[in-house]
Length: 64
View 1 (cartoon, rainbow, N blue to C red):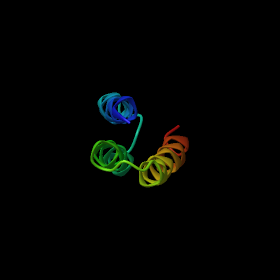
View 2 (cartoon, rainbow, N blue to C red; view 1 turned 135 degrees about the vertical axis):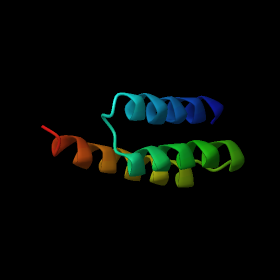
View 3 (cartoon, rainbow, N blue to C red; view 1 turned 90 degrees about the vertical axis):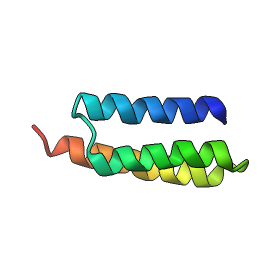
View 4 (spheres, rainbow, N blue to C red; view 1 turned 120 degrees about the vertical axis):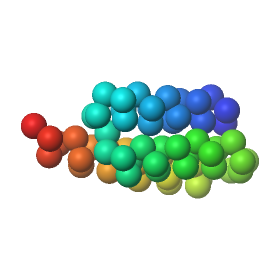
């Protein structure tokens, strides 16, 4: 779970710096990273990360 948290936090930071991911999706990624560190079950983390990925995919398609 710690590797998952590191990966989600890195995705949020890198996506925000390159302006490829919206701010809301980055917040969801960081929240998922925090939940991954605090809770032992994987389901809440997967739900938050999935919502963040969906938001990122939706917001990146509109910025052409």
